[in-house]
Image (tube, rainbow, N blue to C red; front, top):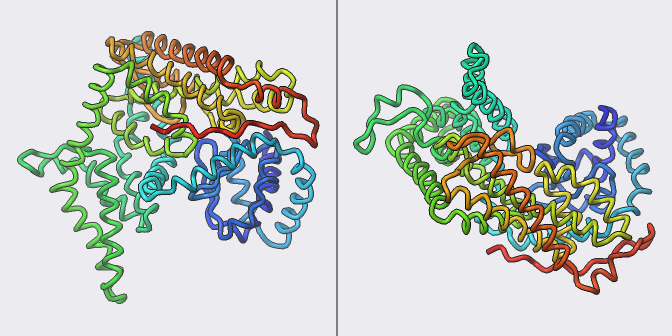
Length: 502
């Protein structure tokens, strides 16, 4: 997609979210453009979903437009530029874009609309305080994912060079590049935590930086000397959150004349002392416990644990709560160098791909739905499941459940090999599907990790396909869906049954 196409996509989106005056914030994750809105009622959902570049929309704490990997990172800067340029020229551009997209609104697919409506209704029902908190925690870590991916791949490359003995002069340089970010990740977590919870970001980063300062080795807490980095991202998150509350407390009583001196000092000092003499030790013990629990879980009940984790992950993705697992993945990477959970959870995507392929073959006359599947499958093989979830399986209902069955089977396969001693994990978080292969590592060697992971994907594809092909449709669904709807008669679908989350 050329740069002018990215700008055209952004120009088409802007008027459909209410124009530049309705936009309060702009961000993006791996697949979604996330927009803060002043007035949600100004958004034209159906016209947005009809845009060729838009794979779906999600109405959550921010309004999220699914554009897919790569595309979102290029459309977002163009969208930001259009908002900044808003004025007479910008207004003319957005008005033209509105006219250009009006005709395409009639081509929106019924299944995509139905899937997004289900997602929005489910999100509204699940906006509990705990889940909203998890989403906020996820917002802290999502901006860190690109660096985690890049450094993880470099670490994997460095491991290959180390084991092979090739380019020994390059190995130390790659080690420094791969480890630099991870050694300071606590600072970034502290910065983002303060930003997310309404504090001064740099103060959150300053308090979290205490955790990685080498001089903490001279400090004793609970009868033990601290170690630099002890507590990791969990300690950084807690320390920065405490700093936010201290800062807000200071703002309520510190006179304005001395606020610039007193508030920053107390915001760093008080949480800093609590961090050194409490949080670092406690968070370190929690991190050790998470690592121990994950190892024991897969060592003693790997197949069953994999079945449960792989089977339930698609509903978490559907709800957007899968990002809340990032702190756990990051803690496991800090603990053992890789996260054993990610390859198992990635099996959910394999089940989804298998289910989508089965839908493709079961509905040979539904050209509209088959076109959606063909366009979304490449992203699905690379681990991006939203287009297939919102455009295919979720609105159909039964195929969503059978996709979960495929994920459970793949997860059980990978979990079984962990139980048999062939444990492995991912050195970074973010990718799944085929994109996870470069990040695999484990004590049994890269060859074993690749073979088991590939076997899990194959099982997930096969079981997801078979379960959907034989059990994913009722006779009435096939009669309604296996037709060639014209542009004015979009395909009908059986109302989706809500899959159980536990």
